[in-house]
Image (cartoon, rainbow, N blue to C red; front, side, top):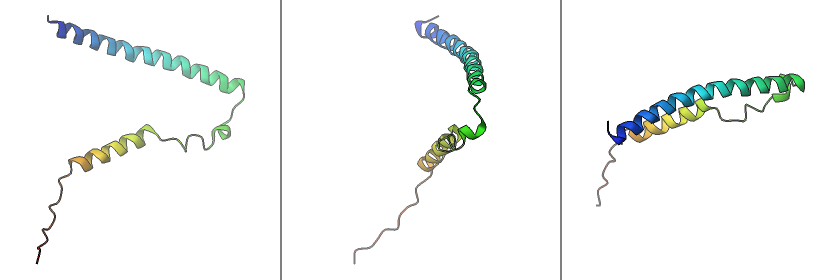
Length: 84
């Protein structure tokens, strides 16, 4: 096994480990947030408008998709103007 293969294998293992750790920590963070919402008695109206002003990941993905489509779109030939 070459050095590159070893590094790639480690990279794949770390990527899998990262996914598991993110899921685990995500659950802990969400649990903490829910506890604080209950503790301070926040309601949905306390957050009204907060999230509408934020850009969602879906909006970013849609924007990037449109930009990529425009970049890959074949350009129309322009009509040559005669100099008379």
